[in-house]
Image (cartoon, one colour):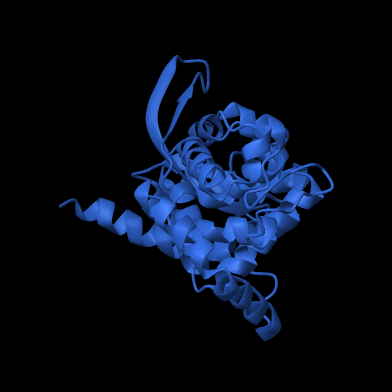
Length: 287
């Protein structure tokens, strides 16, 4: 067993807790909200049981039943103002994509089978349930545009480029998962996919292909890249190659995703407070 990998996992999991508190959380944890969601589930027990059984057959988590909960309150006969129909609120184009006819969108059995396949495919693409819920609401095209605009595949970064309705939809989902006691599972899944993604970059400084596996965390504009390089005993040009455009992003947004090779990330996280203190202190001297 590789101790360094275990240590890296512990450090990354620790830093991921900041993501929970800072970016993703239930926006309504009131007793009335919890009671409302639980009452809807309890009033539709047969439908919920069928949905959970269908999800389990595909190896999907039970909390996805909350997507139908916030979409339709499990009402198979509901039609939205936009024309979405049934428990899973399928638009005609989405239904047709999976061979579900327009008339069968309010068929609980057929629509649930299609929803399970659709959600499974979205998870294979995005690797976390938060982004899946967003894509289910506004479509993969809008998610792709938001990612491109933000220059990031992380929901908490690209979400500001999504429609307001989709952002609220994800909040409702997190609220429902809080009510059912599954919020931590959803957030852990998001942070796990976010912190353990392996990136393969090309080009960098123009020296050809770079096959180093990169891990990621967040830094703000208080960090000095030269001091980070000094503390890690590497050349600052390497940091810039791993993080193209980071100087502009820190200046414009005040924060940025920060990439380092996986073997350097534990050292950075251990020294993070020291690096920030040095950055602030030496920045004052420079002024």
